[in-house]
Image (cartoon, rainbow, N blue to C red; front, side, top):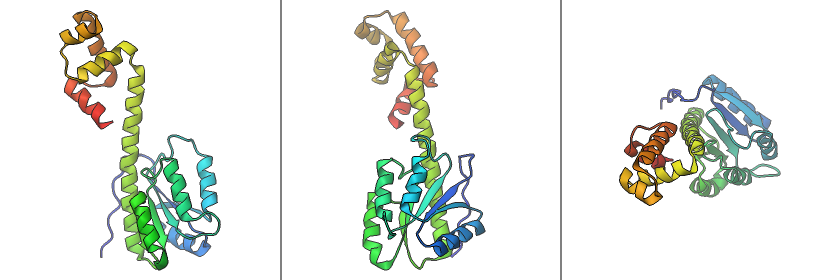
Length: 219
């Protein structure tokens, strides 16, 4: 089975694969495998060490590059499953897709984790090419999630630039009301509505009410 090509990422930052496994030999082997496919990796010997890294990062805006996590299910101390739950609490499961590395006995647990939002699980011993291919797919999913997060953040900034009156006008524009009815509801002149409407379009970077409605619906 041929390996998939490295996808084109929207992010300008290099993708990163994080490895969390308590066995040094496993982390080293995975790092070598990823290097052979020109992928950067960063290894951690425990879930606690990885979480400490997360604690040192900004609460918002990390990761800033397509990323995924190859996570062992069973480890001394905090298990991979417990770490995954922490990632869900932090809202990272989409921008940091998790691929569980699991033994045969852990497959039912891993399947349950996929239902909770994990990207996938790979049973040991695994096919090298299949694992890296799945990691590449996880990185592509991360890239899409980061793009969506960036769009959402930009939209929030635009909304914050609106005055209270502009927000009121925007809400009525989105409902499809013409300027005359908006003026009547807000007890202002039609000319004032036109001015606010133009400012809303400018600040939200749209050219029509339909485009504005679609933008807000997708956010």
